[in-house]
Image (cartoon, rainbow, N blue to C red; front, side, top):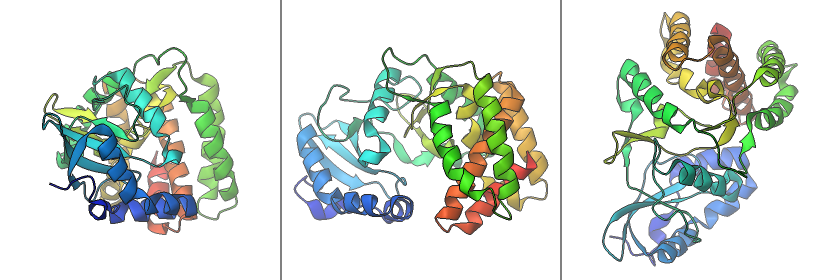
Length: 307
């Protein structure tokens, strides 16, 4: 067991360095350099002893498996950079209080980082066959769709996507992405104008964000909470395993069938799910282009063109 004073044990995983460095540049680099000391301080603040850093981990935070010094109970410590808005994640998890999502063990704690119940970081819904994974995902995400708390500070879908649309506009003249960018920007205006639901959403829901647990078979982690309609929240799930879809001869028809199944299973308007799925796929593609991840962008654009 690594004691909190052993800062050398807490170097950020390579995946985190790659993802944050490529997306946020210098601000992320400054934060990454402080990770070993920040983990040590957070462990001490919460009275935890570390077991190990989760590898390969996520692309936006450091997770350390730990135990409480007082009673030896298992826990997980999550540290994320300020620009990832960890305070909003804390607020969403506190509001769900373990219903469909990982539970905060110290919801009132003022120390750095989030102290969470221990899940199985190596077992996500991606370990299941696709049909079973989608079924379990639908059962999990529906639990998260609740009214937000009074006086909440969660961003509305309209505001988040308006900011994204502004960045996407730079790709209107792109030879490959341009037509799709133009189409989804126009569709977004209609989607926002016609939205009626104002529910608390996970914001980044996909198979890899649902982990196996002890208290419940599957629990969501890593929300980027937002308030809006349910169809927005399914857009990343609808394109999960996109590399497999694109590689298959029947990928286009399989993608459309998946969209129909998700809409039917959760009683959603299929056209609104289609619209948000296309918007979020093209938005992710333009960010990938900006970071030089051309192959990823190509996969996402091909998927969006199928819908």
